[in-house]
Length: 152
Length: 152
Image (tube, rainbow over all chains, first blue to last red; front, side, top):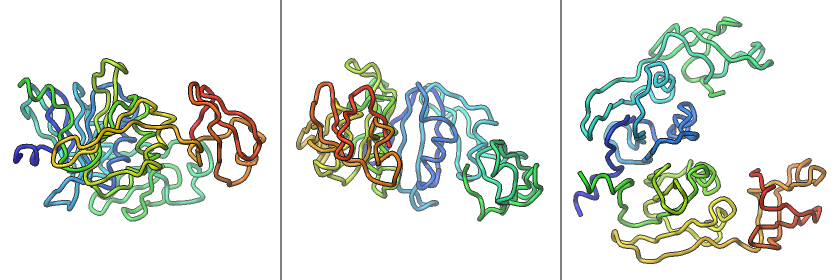
C-alpha cells in the first residue's frame, strides 16, 4: 500500500510535468495554457501535500513540449512552478518558470479609464519590476502592482 | 513499464471515482460539482483511451462521498458516467448517474423571452422525457430539448 500512497498522479512516458503550482491557481493555469481544450492525455492533481506551498497542484501533459513563451505566461500566477521534460519516463530536463519582459493579455490593467478596460483591446504590459511584480501598461502607462493583478 | 502504461490516474484510499465522463465535458463537470473550489485531494485525467466513448475523462476525489442530488446534476452532460465509491483502495459500491425529475439551475431555458433569460432567476425544469431529454420550464412552460441544452 505504501507505493500507492506515494504515487498521487501517475507517470507519463513523454511530455511535460508542471509541478509546484499553488493549489488555488490550478484552474487559472489550465485556462491560460488552453488545456481545457486539448486533445492530448492530461492528468491533473490538486490539493496534494507539499512542504513548500502547503498544498500544491501538478499537471502532466503527454506528448507536449511547451515553448518558453507559452509556459512563461503562467509566471504571474505560479511563479514557483517547475517544469520537468519527460522522455521515456525519465526527467530529461528541468526548467524554471521565468517572468517574461512583456505580458500580452492575461492580466487586466488596474486603471479603470485605460482603453483596454473600455474597448476590446488586448492588454500589453512591460514588466518593470520582478519582485514584487510591477507591470507598466503600454497604452495608459499606469502601473499595475503585484497585489492588484487581476486576470482578464 | 507495463504497469505504468496501464495506470493513468493513481488510486485513492477513500473517496469517489467518477468514470466515463465524455472528454469534452470534464471541465463542465468540474464546475457543476464545484470541484474547482475544493480542498480535498483531487486528481483528474482527460483524453484517456476508452473503448466506449472514444476518449474519456475521470475524476477522483479523496474523502468525499457525494449525495445523489449532487451527483445527478451532471446527468445532462455525462449521462453515462459511473460512480465508484472507494474504501481502503477497494470499490465498495458502484452507482449510475440518474437524470433527476427536476433540474434547478445548470441549464438555460431555450425560450429567449423566458423570465429566467431576462432577470436574475434560477431556472427550474421538470424532466418530461429522458431519452432524448426534454425539459419543461417551470416559468414559461416551453420545452428545451436535448440538442438545445446550453449551460447557464
